[in-house]
Image (cartoon, rainbow, N blue to C red; front, side):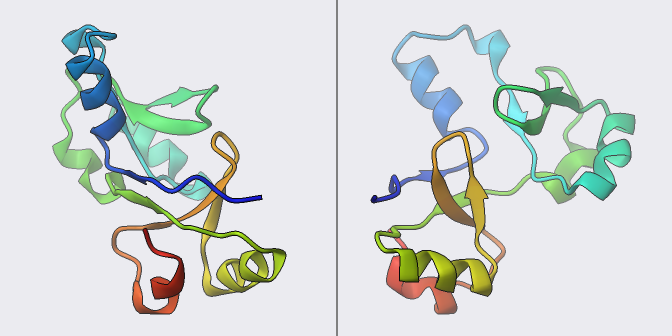
Amino acid sequence: MTAAVMSQSVHTQTELELINGHMNPCDTRVYLECPYHEKERVKEHGARWDNIMRRWFAAPGTDLKPLAPWIKERIYLRCSSIEDRGTIENLGAKYDTTISGYYILDDTEKEPFARWLP
């Protein structure tokens, strides 16, 4: 099975939906990379939980400055074999169940993942 190859910034999907006329500009969300143990901190700053995406997000109108530490880009990896999956998991890649693909965050050292980068 080949994982989807894509790079998702905090706005990419929303911008595409806006460009294609599928979404009202007032409906934009900024998704966050928040570990479970920090969930109370993002909630204090107005973040909400999206149960479908399984991610925290800042709703339109939320002040993003206090949420800046959790605003990161996901870079999805090209991973086609079981051996590759084990290797990238050991290197620290995470799995996104919503798209069935592995990713790293934009602040991750990319050299160890060079083989699988888009």
